[in-house]
Length: 424
Image (cartoon, rainbow, N blue to C red; front, side):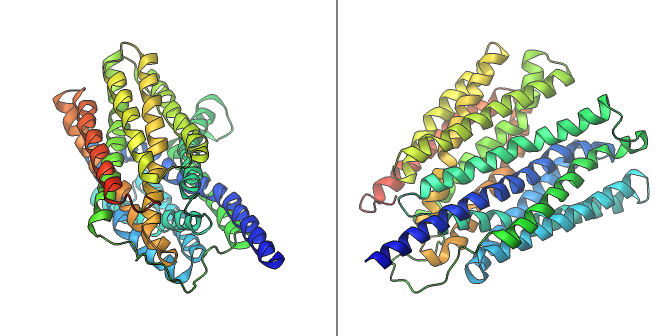
């Protein structure tokens, strides 16, 4: 009995250590993708690309993420989480260096315009295809080291780390821009290539993350015999319903992210500089409240994950109504903060529910397939948001309202169908 107890304590201590070691890596992974989101439009403009071409490149990148993430998730179930995470980190590092080199040659006029488009697209596809392994590997690691009871809390920590990275990415880009504008740290001849420096700096951070994972992060996945009655996560009705809620949630989030800058500038008659500052404040507070929800409510309240999705919908609806009818910027930020609370509840609830639908040997596949939702959402959302915004600036927000009524109804139906299953 003592030995057994000792094993449990050691296992619990090891799992906590893995989570603690994993969090910085998750922050770097999210930060790396966020830096790309911040710099791609600026680099594209400097290369002479149209807005439609830039958004098409972003959409194709998201599509590659959507296609390859399930594959990497399944591979992590066979080869281990650490192996796939290392591939993802190495892939990000080399593909980003290739992208920066191509962009540099494009800026000095080395390529024809058509060749430049093809090579930039190739570099972005390579980055998304290889880098896609990082998300399911890290998410499945969290699933490996948390119990079913604590899965939502673990996914909350995972989501909070992602949000921290999402905040730090724009901070890094803005800080480097400030150094170029206000100091003489960088030589003046580097100014035309300043947009590439955040990516190069992020590559250095990823090298640090790679070494950290290789030398210090233990493997969390141990293949073992199991008598679980659960099957691998697949596209059965229940999982399709769950994924549909994720697609709706992430599409709505992508709509908000894609039109917020335009909405702020047009609604409150802001200059470009003030719009950039206001956008950072609005999205920053939204991410901050999401982190607060994931580190407090999700950690402390033990409820089935699907309940978290249900609880998120009123925050989304109230936040959207406040934002679209805001009389001033401060009120608008208040609405964005409520939307952030909704994201802070909905995303860990969604990921944890997907994880609990699969057995312990299929967590990589489960998280990989769960990542289909953000990939599809960020492919659909920007296009839908832009199309609706051209009709009326309020339409993207108003469209979100019936979407989240639908999310609530689907989540309630999933809950009703699984009343006998306490994990859901």
